[in-house]
Image 1 (tube, one colour):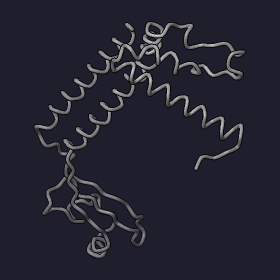
Image 2 (cartoon, rainbow, N blue to C red):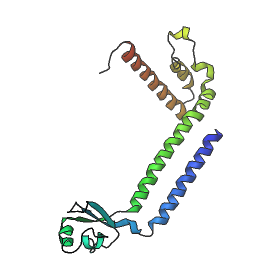
Image 3 (cartoon, rainbow, N blue to C red):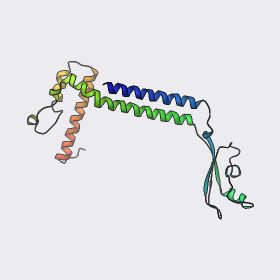
Length: 192
């Protein structure tokens, strides 16, 4: 329980730090937000190359971006005609917000996993008792740890709260999955 609380605090602190970093960088426009990209194919003795440079949109051409020029003299114009230059602009603010959203969802899933592995077994023991959920193999025939879940949940329905309803739905789903596995693997029947 204590470990899950520490994990939750660490996740929250990291999300707040990421949000602060995104807020600092969003106010000013970085020099990396705009660029001119020229793709030049091979020409005579020179190999093809890709050139990137931070220039204004009106200066986005081969003469301003390609440096050093791989050809000299009269071949410069012919070389530049073969190059394809594009002005590109991106929003780093949108990228930062997307990454923060992605990391937030990932953090929530991580917290849920911690809850499922640490907190849920403790709650199950308190609500149902450890011995009620596990029966011996002689009673059932094959090992099914949730075989008496319906009986246990029927007794606990008198305490109609959200946790019991969620637990009932989870147990019902687990029983359905077990039945489907038995149908497919033991009886070789595929549900349609």
